[in-house]
Length: 205
Image (tube, rainbow, N blue to C red; front, side, top):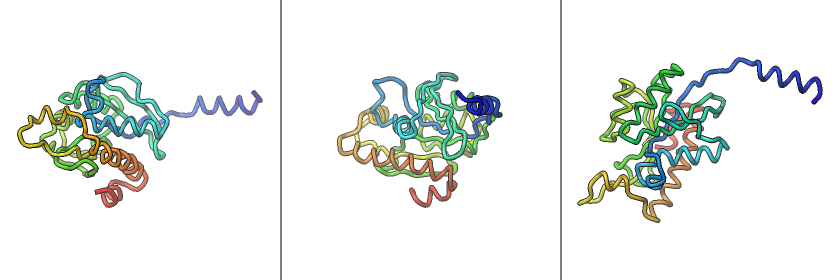
C-alpha cells in the first residue's frame, strides 16, 4: 500500500459519519412458515431491494432486522420488524427514537387487500384502513402523517376469514402480478428519494 493509499484510508476512516435520515420498513411476519404469504408483501419488497442493491438486511436490534445503507444519495435504514405483524410499531418507534427520525421520513410498505395483485398505491399519509400492522405503527408513532406504499394482494373471497386469507400463499397467477408490484415498488422508492413522493405517486398510482 502506497503512502497515498494510506492517506486515503485514514481520511475515509476519520470522515464524519452522517446519521441515517430515513427509515424504509417493509412489514411481514418472521419465519419460514410466513415467507410466501400475502401478509409478507412488505418483506418481499425489502428482499428484492436488498438483492438489487447488494445489501444485507440482517443486523439484529430493536426486535428488527435492518441495514444501514446509502440509497440514491441518502442514508437509509431498511427495516424488517421481527415482532410479528400486530406489534410492528414497536420496532419502528424504537429505531425512530434512537436516530431521531421524524414520522414524515418513515416510509412503510405493506400488503393491502383493497387492491388486486399487481396494483400499488402510494400515499403521503392516511389511516390504517383495517391493517393491524399499520394500526400499531400509528399508535406507537402517535401520528398518521407518514408516507406508505400499499401493495395489493387481492380481496378476501366470500366465506374466508381474513386471518386465513392474508396468511395464505399466492396462486401461480397472482405471483406473476406480485412480481410486477415488487419491481414497481423498488423503482418507486428510487423515484421517491430522487424526485419526491409527488413524482412517485404520479408515475405509479
